[in-house]
Each structure stands twice: as structure tokens, then as C-alpha cells.
Amino acid sequence: MLLAFDIGNSNTVLGVFREGELLTNWRIETDSHKSADEYGMLVSQLFAYDKLNMDDVDDIIISTVVPSVLYTLEHMSMKYFGCRPIVVESGVKTGLVIKYDNPKQVGADRIVNAVAAVNKFGGPLIIIDFGTATTFCAVTDKAEYLGGTIAPGLKISSEALFEKTAKLPKVELDEPGHTICRNTVESMQSGLIYGHMGLVEFMVREMKKELQEICGKDKTVKVVATGGLASMIAGGVDCIDVVDKMLTLEGLEIIYQKNKKPCRHEQKDFEWNSEEIG
Image (cartoon, rainbow, N blue to C red; front, side):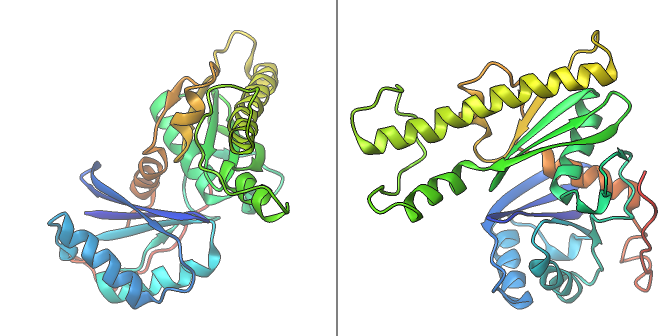
């Protein structure tokens, strides 16, 4: 089995694959203060809950935008699973051509999402990830990762309103149902959620124009959304074609297949060496 970690700023998503099939997944809070043993015990409890055997895990792959957690999970992988994880970073085979000015600056989550989307839907693509930040990524029909846009996510925006103002309260991220609101809570919800929908519609419209200039005006650009708040935003806009909550985990499994090493049960002393991007 393969254990995949997608470590975000707010949450970490874990998935277990057997022969390419996602068996189960969990979402936990990302905590840079947890030790390797604490993460090990937490993962052990999750496996026990779903009646999975940790000894059946042959490999681990990690994608992270939180460097401080990476060492902890690498140590946890060695201690509790007896294997050195594959880390999605510069040097890992992805199947993409990275056109970013400095490929090392691209978040691992953005690359993983792009790998999965290209394999599932082809290109050209716009991929939107509604996480701590809302990211927009553009990929051509030749699997060229061009770059995109990074905007504050809904939760960051909500917390900023609460923390940086004297009288505005914390609010739940629920749609108020109208934009002319008669109380403060609904006014904030309207601005946060419908304002984010407006952001999405504008960015997609402009990115489609730029992508078609590169790929050809006859090319249809598909828009794929992922992340915890994807369904809420997709329900209020017409520009999102597909919502795929498991996109990142599926991308990790695809990258694993391109970089996998011999099973730890067969060759315990094997050391994985990264290859060039491509």
C-alpha cells in the first residue's frame, strides 16, 4: 500500500492507496509543534479505525508547503513504517514542463494538482485550489505548467476582518442568500463569499483569454476546482466545470508511480535518488 500526505498550511490530508485505488482518506489539522511520535500515534489510530494494517504500507509520498513539518514526517515514516518517503520537490519526475521563472518557487501542492488534472482531463486547464490561499494554475495542452495567481483564501480573509477591526465579529462561512444585507454578520458573509465568487469569475475569464492566445482560440479550456470550499464557490459561479476533492491525493499517487523505488519488504537498504523534472 501507499500512504500519501498532502500537508497544507491549515490541514493535512492523508490517503491510502492499494494498486492505484484510493481506499480511504482523512483530514487532520497541520501542527508544526507535534513530534514524530505524536504523528505516528495519530496515524496508528486512523489506521486502526479503518481496520488497516500499518505493516502493509510499502511506500510513503509527501507533498508539503510547510517545511517545518517535513522533517517530522520523514522521521515518523522511518520510525513507524521503516521506509524513506518520496518528497515532492525539485528533481522529482512529474511529467510536466515547468515554465515558472524559478521552478523551485512553485508550491508542491500546485504541481501535484496539475499532474492529476492533466492525467484526468487533458489540457488546456485552469486549476483552482480553495485552501488557506486560493490558487489559480494554468496548464497548456502540451502539459506545460505556466504559472498562475495566488489570492487570500476565504478563511484568511475572514480572520483578517475579525483581527484587524475593532467591532467586526467572527462569522461562519455561510451564504446569506442576498447581497443587500441588514445586519453585520450577513454583510460580512456576503462580502466574503460572493466577493470570492466574483474574484473567481474574473480570474477564470482573464486566464482563459491568455491560455487561448498561447494554445489557440479553438482550444476549450477546462476549469477544475479542488479544496475544502470548492463546492460552495462552484455552486455560485458558472465558470467551474468540475469539482474534484481528491485531486491532490490522486496527483500524489501518479507522481509516486513515476518515481517509485523497490518495495521496502524486498530491498530495505535501497536509497531513492531524485531525477530531473520532466
